[in-house]
Amino acid sequence: MRRYFYGVKVQVLVNANGIQVEFGFVPGCESDVQALKKLPLAVAAESKIYGDSAYTDYQVKDDMKDAELIELMIQRKSNSKRPDEPWVRFIKEQRRKGIETSFSEIKALFLRKIHAVTFKGFLLKLAMFILAFTLNKFTNN
Image 1 (spheres, helix red, strand yellow):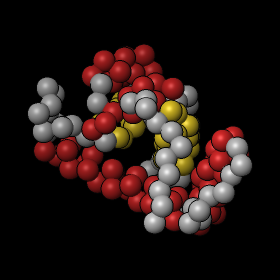
Image 2 (cartoon, helix red, strand yellow):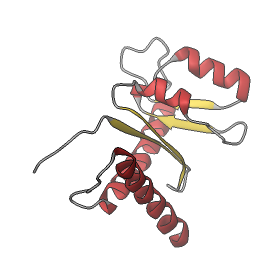
Image 3 (cartoon, helix red, strand yellow):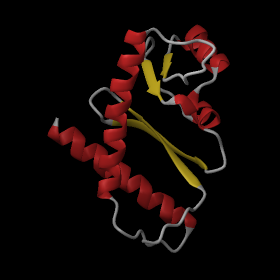
Image 4 (cartoon, one colour):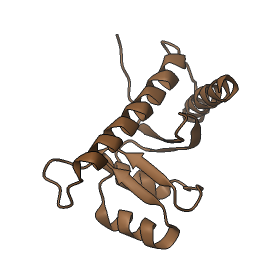
């Protein structure tokens, strides 16, 4: 199977029901923490955002908690400076499994080959797949 990488990563924010609420495209060379800073994060105050260890940045976590009352619930690495309690680690792992399931469901909608003539056309098709997933998930809940 051929695989191509077009230099784009998709950052997706889903709610507890697995419905996508925000997404954005960022350059593939950009770290996940930098990409998180670019999302609008138009969520309610006192929301919790779950992510994997690639989003570990203690300064960003503290700033978001102080400024917007948004709590970043990021899975920590084993050598973390701020280790989680076992029960918190369990909750984070369970939430991450739901997020990964959402990503798998979005990818299942993709065609085997996405044909696009331009880069903007490629991004438009990706956005339409995410929108189709959201509408499908919204109508089924």
